[in-house]
Length: 90
Image (cartoon, rainbow, N blue to C red; front, side):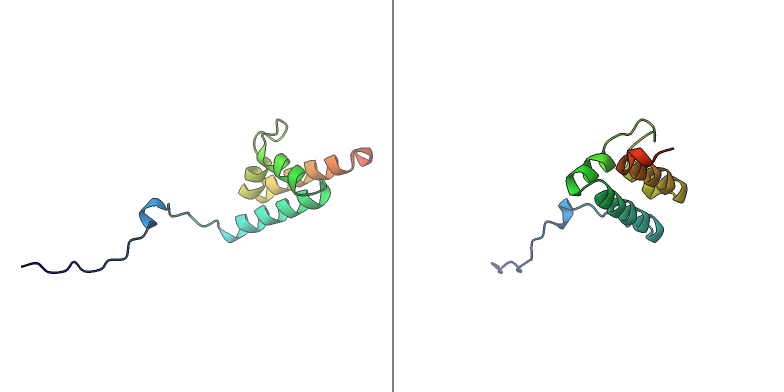
């Protein structure tokens, strides 16, 4: 009557949410805008702060805007380039 319990492997997978993968074009824009910000803004910390903070002129978080569309990417890239070279703005 007393049978040993089958050994089961316990996982924490029920705690992990299944993330939806970004479409390829969105992921590319996200990587490109992150790299541009890193190079133009003087490093990781300023780039992350800019990309993840609400930007009034853009109407939201630059990272989300740039990731969503090619037009959004162009708008955010323009702001980054203007920030990096304020004397060159016409």
